[in-house]
Image (cartoon, rainbow, N blue to C red; front, side, top):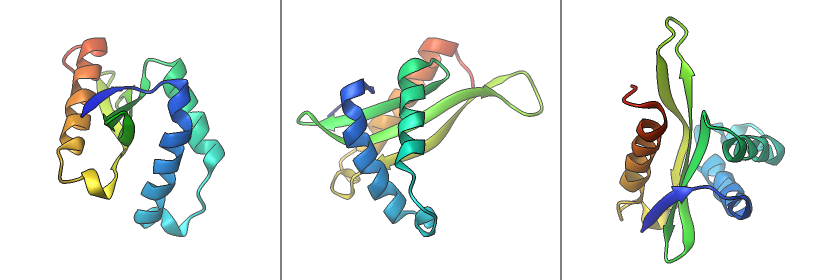
Length: 116
């Protein structure tokens, strides 16, 4: 398995996985908004502070993590936070989630240094 940043052609697959994540979550009682998800993914493509990392198995996206870097409410210190991490059920026991989280940390540290 390998990880990488999202590219425009990934949006449809990540949106599909986003629907699955929504259906499995405690937020399933609220309506799913494709347009909201697409706007966030486009922000990931366009920006530096918001990003999406995908994990692939045999060239198929099997998970993703959306994160962002912002100043905390109490300080000007930057912090990295995840918005959503999702891995397909069949890949959850195959290290895909760990790979995503390591890639998340590596990406943040490469752009912003050693921030929390």
